[in-house]
Image (cartoon, rainbow, N blue to C red):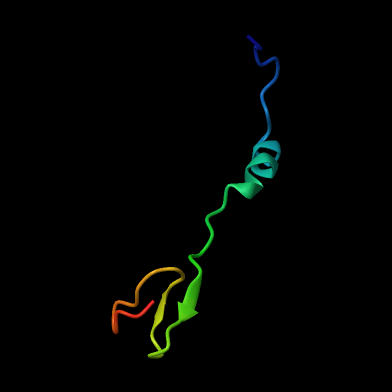
Length: 48
């Protein structure tokens, strides 16, 4: 098993973790005008 020889800097750690960000859910507009998650039923009118 590999053993760390030197301590990584904060910058190096941040560069590695740049892709760990959260993405916003894809919201689409329903036929009734309400925003909903894609591929889900509308909470207001019940349409897909």
